[in-house]
Length: 156
Length: 156
Image (cartoon, rainbow over all chains, first blue to last red; front, side, top):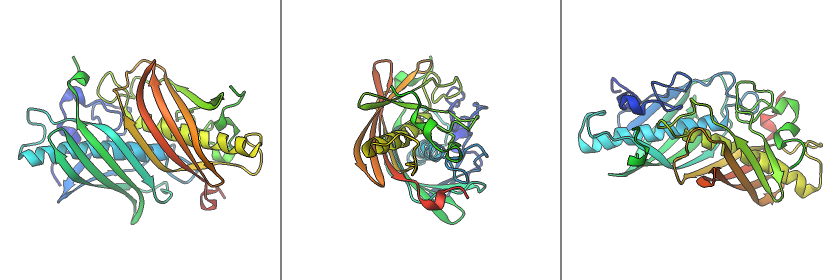
């Protein structure tokens, strides 16, 4: 496990994401780390993140997969270039496409664990496959096509 | 436009969804209605639903597509059976699979409009295609495979 999460290496002005921005006090503040070749994030849903009572809301699961995907894309892109996360030029990714298959109802009251693999790493595009577990149960499988943040999205 | 939203016709005990449950005071409370052959929902993101500053968080967009998808599935299933939404037996759907393609950055500060089409309606499965607009700009396209809620998820 690295000392800092991928998301903690984003530039200050790009750290306001509702899912993972360390400067978004209303958001989920998801944090992703390397654990060997995989990226891992953990998240405990709040009591109101319900779908059907007793089960976690699928939109939250999609959100966690989304941010773990773009975070892993950033971490993998830096690693592929042999650079320290956060070093310039910034490798910040946004989501081009998100696919989530819900395999089993996700129980409330348990920490969720997301395990990611960057299966394709190109300069402007990283594909990340993610499995989401509650305990030992594989509850969802996701695929994120992350693309380098376009210049048009850069804060002025 | 019907008088009640699809989600307002869900049974009380199945109305706690973070994305669309009328009994979830912390959630988004998305509401979907027929407008002719299409289902439509409207949502104004809050200031903290940010991705990169100035743009809407993709996880929120995925969440809205998810709930508009399952809501449309319910509405379409009732319509296909010629029954009033909310009549017994309940036609409540959950998400089996969610696909979102982000076509353009979604600007903050504008009401979003989701337009859905139920392209396949079977007793246990409804496929819904959704387009999400900010003004006239098509920002995202989604596809939800909604499945009838399994008995195992029913509240005791």
